[in-house]
Length: 110
Length: 112
Image (tube, rainbow over all chains, first blue to last red; front, side, top):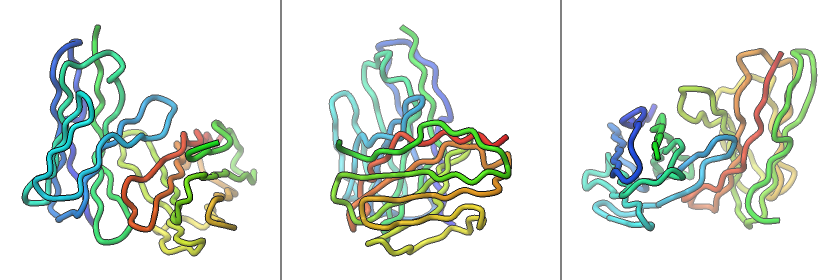
């Protein structure tokens, strides 16, 4: 079945640093989405990408839909303590089913 | 109330118990999903309902039984579970296109 490889698995950074994480797949996706999950909560949508090459920002977050449609990255600039959580990528195909990556755990030290 | 609401938030049950998880969405979405989230594993899709009809069952054991009485409500009935079924169970909803699922906060299930 389709799989998403998300890296890195975890990141431990200082407040103020920039962060970059990415997802790759052997399959083509029509949409890429990035979610954040905080402890005890469900994932919350951060950014949705619908077109190959698309670059979209949401505050300090920027995500891009790879031109090959097989990858996506998420950047967080000037990290703050509340950025802590697990970040998931998800790819959508022709159906309404999303495939999720394994997640990147982000820890930010003040 | 807005968004996707799941109850209970926490559940501890014995292997011989029968319990149900409830999900309710107030977003006017047409599709609802159950996901299982275990430590160090990707989110696992369990069931998909589109317009109250089950369109996908991802080889889930029969001890998990979903029910979708209408487009706003989704249940997961549990019976004779195993300890390895302990996980966070997430409900989500979306429109037809499936873009941008909205998740509930999940039910943390512990089977003892």
